[in-house]
Length: 581
Picture (cartoon, one colour):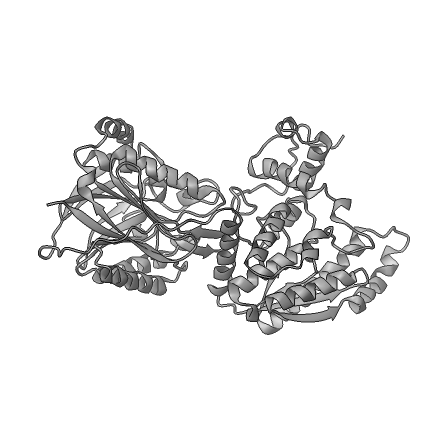
């Protein structure tokens, strides 16, 4: 008789710190899995605490309370098994996965590899684990691991496969950036083929501060073939039947042995947990394979920003947002994302005209608001602008008008937006993009200020790409917004190109310098103009103090400002070739 298991991957959206709510989420989805007649249901990394819990883990009461919630989850597993991520305190603090079965906690796995790069800081909180339990459920040998443990060929999964594991479960909190999904899936497929085992990879979904998690949970077969794929950026219970016999008798023994020899250095202690079952399992009608088409390109990025924005607002119990509408492309895209994330009835646009605001900009902002169905408010900043000019006139007398005078305008606008926020409980969405933030092309305490920076990790060229994508879904952003030259409209005839290189030149240089850490020489060798490279690097390096004071925003690229790229503000290092000639 062939041996098969029905496995369910609970791709859920927990909230960091909401121990009660997250535990309810786990117990509810255990019940959903039971209704689907699953034998085992797997939840994401640290699902009880939410991911990443950061310094909450340093609070003893938090760790204690999360452990108590695991007991609640265990009681919900009568007649089913579950793998649940939590924080374990066993003399030291561990990022852990609990195997729950038939109402009891059977064993705990401790994460071995603790990432400490990019957005990850796990060595600050956790100790590496050495436990390696093998669970035997209805004759099927199962290994469990956590997130980063899957990325090492000679890691815990190799050791588990060497000890006969036929199903390898890996629970994750894997943050999104564009292009990561395909790399991740290729890696998981390689593990399955190299170990001749089924690999079930469950990922969390949702936004947490600057991070967004894409889901895209998968199950791969012992030849590296995809058996099931969950949706992108949505909660889902992915259910898959696996025929374990397919992993027997044809395993790549030499490959497993080679990788396991490399894993010996980890000093993993294998134990075996036999899980009793109540009687023979009933036969089940076969399931149709569920292989969702993952999102790609502009559609993927847009979905990521919409989800990240939604969760940042809603998980903090804000209801409405307020956005300054300039008639330009950045505020237009920000408004479209906000309306899609929160509903247009919860988005307030504000036009704040000055002596330099063009008629076209006012018209475009109104057309945008009408197309999106959002509220539009109007203020003139002329009275306070004149007042500031009068106040400062004695001090500024005899000087040439310049940036200081221009920046009064965005600071007045910021004051109006934050007054509305303060009075009515809205949150201000700032509208600056990554190109501007990188080069300091924004006003501190003006347009940089806000509660959330929706476009913080999106370059100007990608802004246009996302606008075109959004318009493909339905009327939103007026065509003139996409064709007119970008301008801050802080002085007559102003264009962004007065202060910056064209974005088609600027953005590739920023990608090389900021995201790939390329030197000036490497950028020039790649075909960029030497003077432009030097000028851009100087702008980036001098603007760190502004970026440090910018609000959080959704991470989209492999290296975002903030959690990813952490440069000192006081910093005299200047790479060779970075000074303009």
